[in-house]
Amino acid sequence: MIEYISEVSNEDNYRKYNHFLITENLNELLHKDYYLYNTKDFNKANLVEELYNKNFVNKYDNVEHKQIFDLYINNDKFKEKAQFIYSMIDYDKFKAFVENNDNITNPEEYTIIYNIVDSDGVKVTMYQLSLTDIAFVF
Image (tube, rainbow, N blue to C red; front, top):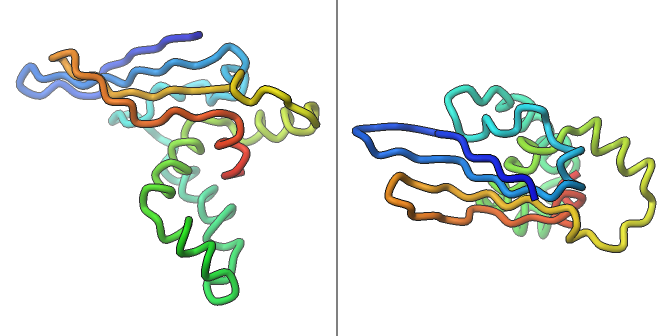
């Protein structure tokens, strides 16, 4: 596992940190600056929104695919999760990976766990995702 911790904020000596645990296999699919997620230096907001619209909002008709809109597109928690994935996973690397790997038997070998940790040592797991979750949103 690769572990990466970076400071997100520091207000009145109360600090928050991004804490990533990433399997070696998944590391090859990440944006080179994934660790900027949730920081003031994060610069992928437009890309994230574009991918979400491409893969969900613009892909389905809200009348014909009402159930998809109800379950996913209009579900804020799902949208946040999908946008987190788009923030982490490089689309071009993922596309090449899919083209070169037509059969993955252990998607759990491709995981990312994202926590937020504060200066008091409180750790909250925000996402624990595998290749299955990632493939679903692409």
